[in-house]
Length: 425
Ligand code: SAH
Ligand code: SF4
Image (cartoon, rainbow, N blue to C red; front, side, top):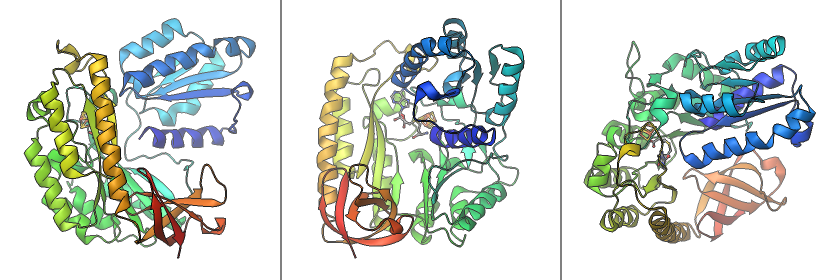
């Protein structure tokens, strides 16, 4: 979501005449799009802002802006205003369209300009410079109502709001006309899409509508909360040919006691039943997840339950996080915080287990011919192309650059835990 916001900001700046530079010393405008979800990212922003002080002294006309969800809690905004006075513009996730007027206000007054009022409506999407010419992100909702006790998102991004299906379809149709092949629908919990609309519609029905858009070949979506994943969604995934056989389904923790403390509203048993249903109805499905290690009060036994779920589900990919205390959330007030070195050791054990499972799952792809959407040359070797399967597996293979943006078939001949290698067919 953060990256998608950056695409919009880049568009606005380019319209104003700015061009991208690789060298920070050459910049006339520097902007940080922040994220508040974990402390590390927050600290990084302060570090970066601090290191800009000498450059700003040298180039006082250079504009420094900070935006993103970190600005939407009082604390960060105040710290920046007090300690980082060389920052010129501060705005939130719902003020992106106001950026040109914020720049004007700063230039005409010389003051630091702040705007974090809720302004941009989900139905009025801003044009953007898409990072990819054939893979597009589409916002379908903003905010979150779930209040998982560790998470700052509902405080920073506000309550859930759904975009109308008409507005979504307009954007998807436009992308299809421009030659986009793959779209990813974005929301904090896409499974509760549509509930707040004046004419409520369900997420599975939205998928069925988008599945009919000619030209779009693949549909993905992020993120699904297990408590709201309906049988109808599983049916829609199975019946819609463009919806990829891949699902990101965060479980966060395996222990029922911890899940309750997290306010996740499902049990380990509910989660495993969902996975069973998904694997039955969509046999080739690949699954990924988010896991938090070291939530307050997590014991060795609780952590073993997390390992048990990982072993049972056999994920293809996963994002693992050490619990990060976020002031303002309920979990931050819990007085049984887990020591960092214990969390760190558990985290390493979890990674070991997961990487082994990813390796075995990728091994099962050997000899298969898979459809790959070619994304570009590989980072390390210009002669090698890279792309993703419908199951979101990264594939490297030799081929001509003219194939970029096309769907091709690749026979899988090699693998590691994180990617596959193969030969173009
Ligand atoms: N709405 C999505 C994702 C939200 S943030 C969902 O519910 O799945 C992405 C991930 O960051 C979460 O799934 C969670 O695993 C992690 N996360 C959120 N808050 C965190 C915290 N305080 N400490 C560590 N990880 C956190
Ligand atoms: Fe955070 Fe939970 Fe909402 Fe996801 S569902 S954004 S983890 S509160």
